[in-house]
Amino acid sequence: MAEQLLNYVNGEWRRSAADRFLEVSNPATAEVLATVPISPVSEVDEAARLALAAFPAWRRTPATARIQQLFKLKALMEEHFEDLSRSITLENGKVLDDARGEMRRAIENVEVACGIPTMMMGDFAEDVARGVDEYMIRQPVGVAALICPFNFPGMIPFWYLPYALATGNTVIVKPSERCPITLQKAFQLLEQVGFPKGVVNLVNGGADTVNALLDHPAISAVTFVGSTPVARHIYARASANGKRVQAQGGAKNPVILLPDADVALTTSIVTDSAFGNAGQRCLAASLAITVGEADKIFVPALAEAAAARLVGNGLERGVQMGPVISPQSKARIEGLIQKGLDEGGKLVLDGRGASIAGGENGYFLRPTLLSDLPVGGTIAKTELFGPVLGMMRVDSVEEAIQLVNSGEYGNMACVFTSSGAAARKFRYEADAGNIGINIGVAAPMAFFPFSGWKNSFFGTLHAQGKHAVEFFTQTKVVVERWLGEWARKF
Ligand code: NAD
Image (cartoon, rainbow, N blue to C red):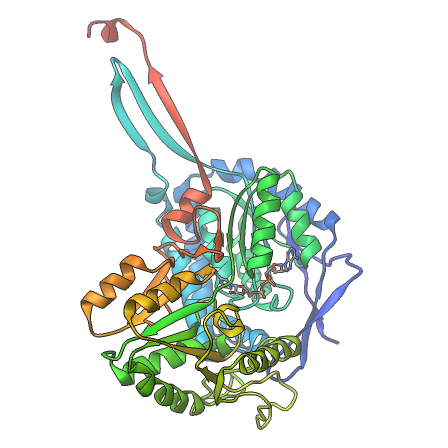
């Protein structure tokens, strides 16, 4: 019998009374790894009330003491690094090295949040009027709900959790029901750290569980990462309920390839970006726009590099690409490839019907490359979230930037060139929040914000670093005068 995942509420592991459970399977083998409860509204209500009850004491704990818990957490995450990384590969399918990279990013956010005593300091101005001083302090907002996607089950909760806790908030995390196992393991570490009861809580579930979080009056802040339609829903519903919200959505990331780009390096970087994590990254290169003669160089070069990628079980040494998350996802991607062909795209490399030795039950596709896509066609504008790179040709950098800016998403845009002038023009004009210059996955480090734009983001303050500190704190301004003999002299 597969393990039944538990919720962690008020410092204890609890079996959900859910009447609905989903199976969590290994996408490389279809083996069922666990069952996850779709926790009912009553369990969200209990977690939210207990998190609110824990807030006053946690808030009063000095920041210097709160971060001691994060130092312990960092040490435990280092100690269990391989186990957490392996768990990501098992439930998500990505190759073990990518899973390790993911956990490294998670830990980096814990490290940055250890600087909270400095990062949440306020401002002070003396004599704003005669004998009057004014200052601004940052205070935590209360209970924060963190709603997470399947594609980075170990990292994305940590884009928020360390900052929310360090600034004095209490937290409820809702992992993706498709990849909830790694967070369960991370919570075993959070339990060992010894946070006071109710400070960190885990509630498993699906859409109804999320909606209960969005509606709960005890919750003050909501963070979300996932697809754009759900991000839009989260932003609208939680803001209508008076909460502060940041909702990171989907993407369709273009990369511009100029004829003067370094061919070997660009080919290797773009292939990694498009096919790493089987294209299931919100920063995956998904549309390559070649300028001028660049298509003659890069269509064959990318096809050769993509065809050479070793596809298989991510736990096996040397494998460069694992499966996609589910059979439904595989069928959806295959359908979109066909649509791209029906709309006039050329099939340079076909990854459908992949047969992987030992992976007969897995949800595998091989890298797929489609060229000559029509402007405005389905592949050029739809988030595929699979190992498919579409290609289009234009005549100038201006045209390429126009094409980039015509897209509805704005998560990432990259340029590959040896011209500083072209790179600067691109950086200046591209409508995207994360820019790569000769970089294929422009993932911000933990001390920079993860800056999606347009339909890739709903809100003002982004994940990570200073933005997270601002998001999880509210500013209070104090204007102060003290009367007395001494003051009157001046
Ligand atoms: P998803 O939108 O299906 O699910 C994300 C979360 O929302 C899950 O916890 C799920 O339970 C919940 N959810 C799903 N449907 C809901 C509904 N109708 N109402 C309320 N809650 C609902 O996303 P996913 O498939 O898990 O993740 C992949 C998506 O996430 C891609 O679109 C990808 O681009 C995006 N993503 C974005 C970023 C970013 O930083 N912008 C990072 C990673 C992933």
